[in-house]
Length: 287
Image (spheres, rainbow, N blue to C red):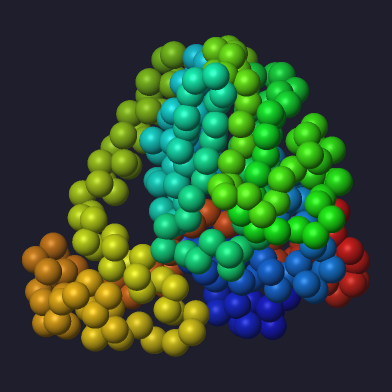
């Protein structure tokens, strides 16, 4: 496992400890390397299928204490960036209840395992908090899988589409009215308050700062992020870049470190390096 961590450009602490940031690029690369070592072409899907959803943390409990599924998903959309600034969830309500995912600061086609994990988590959460075996009307991914994926089809209850225009899962529009089994208005108000405070903290960071971090993140796995290169992306001089960051109490090196540490929750919650080390050493296939 250690050689894979080094090759991915991340640290053991980032992988093993809950609450330690793991940059999206590093996570995507590490999951891909582990999947290859395990000969598990569906590693992201398997991790999300088998994980304890409570390991998601605060956001899961906000959803699980909401009144109805539609309320829960709107809160997931609002607070998603608190736990992962690299992924955006968009909820569209109407005749269909559509949940679409997009990436921010990460090349989408560099990933397959993480996006499959996200969609699997969403489907499992919808089922668990409503205590209903909800069947999606449609599940689609931008990346391709030759021959499809019968194992994923079986869990989704529907043939999954690959090579689509969007990463999305949709349910019947009536699903948004389903009651949440653990609904607790008092607990939910308390948790929403915490989420709003966290969201306000994130919102205090200007879009320019965030944009700089997102511009730096894809560069780091390939080498050092240099101010002139980043400044050119924004059509400003390196001096102007530094001045705008300084006006917000930031520095270019600080933004580079922030992008390197990331804020993406790991797929490995509850399954640290020892879990994967045993499987890698044994040469066992995934699942």
